[in-house]
Image (cartoon, helix red, strand yellow):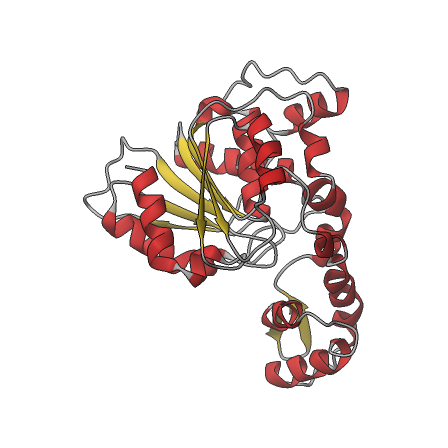
Length: 299
């Protein structure tokens, strides 16, 4: 198995040095690889990581399209604590960057095009900063190194509610009945319909007598500060990534703004910013235009 040496990045803070050492300790992620005969082995694969509370299935259409139209294999991941990937206590961007490195070792990948949305975007940014020699280029979707919108500081309540409600769902209910049970519990306390939909979509019934969430809500909450509210603090002391970066934002979203772009460019000076007329789910709301941006950038 190929062993990767840590690059020349030497963070000034002891905590970041510890993070770099821990980059070797990833878990084995669930993934789907899309490849056609015309996809060249010599072209770095596109590795995709989804956003928080989503899954690799969210990117199925994009992955298939990019694979069929371009020269690169596409590998879509389920991040740790999501889908069938391992459950762990930690869910930081560095934890997830470690997992991508572990996947690269398993698959014999020496360089990748790293593509991430939201949570996955921060994982891929961390990977590029800590191991720049492994990232051929970087695509970040509707997130930056800067602060998240104000309402996101309170959105952790949905994961707190999921943690509390999960054990109370009667096991004899069907999946649809279980979702109705959850809906009654959350609709009076949550005003954002999108958050309610996220909760309902993540409910699973793994056997006849119990329910479960498709993500590890406790791990998400444990890592909330490092991943969401104070992400930039985890990057202090890291040298900028000087490779090519494409930042795709939704014009109706508030994650990619002039102020957060300025913060982004401190770490990724070679960033090109493109907006599509969408909310945060850029790849789903304007799929054809999104695909074209990615295809042009990865040619």
